[in-house]
Structure formats: structure tokens, C-alpha cells
Amino acid sequence: MPRRHQPRTFDLWGVPFDGGSTLGWPGSRYAPARVREALGWITQRIENGAIYSLDSDSVHEVGDDLLRDRGDVDVVGHDIHATLDACSTAVADSLREGRSPIVIGGDDSVLFPCARGVHEALPGRVGVIHFDAHLDLMDHNRHQGRVSQSSGMRRSLELDRINADDCIQVAVRHFNFPSSAIFKRTSGLPHITAREFQALGPVSAVEQILDRVSGADHLFLSFDIDAIDPAFAPGAGAHEPGGLTSGEALEAVRLLAPHCDAFAVTEVNPLTDHPTSTTATLTAYLLFHFAVFGAGGARR
Image 1 (cartoon, rainbow, N blue to C red):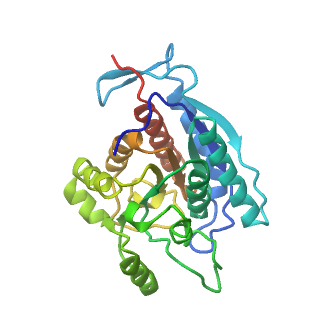
Image 2 (spheres, rainbow, N blue to C red):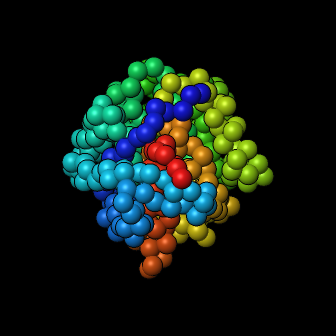
């Protein structure tokens, strides 16, 4: 798969909505504001349009417009469909303007409208790289309906140009619905468990991920924060032990960023986070890694 056209600039959108949190803990509506606070601590290190990465020992020329904060989408608290439509519009608008959207959820019902926004704005086959402890393949149930934090991947796969052949789920673990297992096996949707990812290491795991989605023309990277172990990310909508470390997650995003057209981080929950905003800070670093290493500017 060719890398995205370089260099790139990015739009930051917030979706302060947790109306799809019918399972787990609500509270992700507060994430965009908290993550923006943490992001300011990082972006103040940009100096004369450049940022120094200690990990790569290189100075990245990112310019003065690397990450433009577009504010929050038009959330309608009582209407999940209106809110998700606004999210799709924001993602599509950024892509049509030649910028790459970065979205801060909100609960993981945001996965579907982000994928739909990419699908609406870009031609060809669209793949989804889905980091999550859970499958999000629920079709319908009495408590959640058809659109919720548990159905985003299922709804995305119903779009015309998003096919299981171009998608993969990463860091899934423990237990899920048998009906989701049937759908996965029937559709051919693969996964890499958290345990498998850790055994492979980020470099080899990302190689496998990119090989799987190599037929896609465009990629959306969706990252539910519970893909990371709650020891590193306690501010989540649900706690599933045995997840990725913060270092593994940051390295995966760094390696995937040049290949992906859009990025969303969901289920960050300040109400369950450490008082020092451990999870919000980690999220800010994930977003900034995606922008810096995905921009493709000159290095020195």
C-alpha cells in the first residue's frame, strides 16, 4: 500500500457525546476538553514550526498549521442520529478540504460516523483498523438498538465500499457475544488479540496489519482507549485487563500514521481517570504522534 500523499495537515474535532454508552460507564462527553488541556502541554514545544522527537532523534518540520482545532461538532444530546450525522459531516469536510481529521470522542458510537465520513469523502475501497478490547459487532438488541457503542464496526461494514477484506481488529481480548463470533467468521473479519500483539511486538504486528489492509485505497484508524491496559489508561468506559501498554500503543500509532487518512480516539472517560489525567494525557500523545509522524514533513 502506498503511503498517503505528503506533507499533511490535520483538523482536530471533538465529539462530547456519550449517549451511546448503554454499557460501561458514561462520562466520555468530558474527554475533548480534558484532552485539549493535555495537548496544549505538548504543542507548546513546537518552535519555529518544528518539533524535536527524542524517540527518533530527529527534528520534524511541521509548520505553523499542523493541527488546527475545529472545535466540537454539533452535538444534540437527545438525538444520537443527529449527533453522529454531524460527526460524519465534520470528518468528510476536513478530507474534502485536503486535511486529515483527528477526532476525540465521545463514546465508541463515534466509530461508525467517522468511517462513514471517510467513505463519503474519498473514492475507492476504505479499510478500518480497529483497536479495541471489544468487537463492536452488535447488530441489534433491546437495550442498545442498532446504533450504540457496541455496533460501530458492524454498521461500518454495511457501507458500500467498506469490506471485511480491508479491515482488521486489534487488541481484542477475553469474552464477547457468540453472535459476534458467527458474524466474524462468516464475513472473514480477522483479529489480532492483545496477547498476540504483545508476542509479535509493535513493528511485526503493524506489518501484519498493513499486509491485511493492503488492498484498501484509504484507511481509517479507530482507537478505543480500552485497547490499552487499564493500568496505563484507567480513564476508560470499561476496564479489560491484559491490554496493550502505553508504549506499545504509541509505537503502533506512530507506525500506522503515514498510512491512514483519519484517526479517532474514543471512550476516554475523565470521570474514571486518575486525578492527574493520566489517560487524557496519553490520548493527547496518541493524537500528536499521529499528526507529527503522519505529516511527512522534512526532518533534520
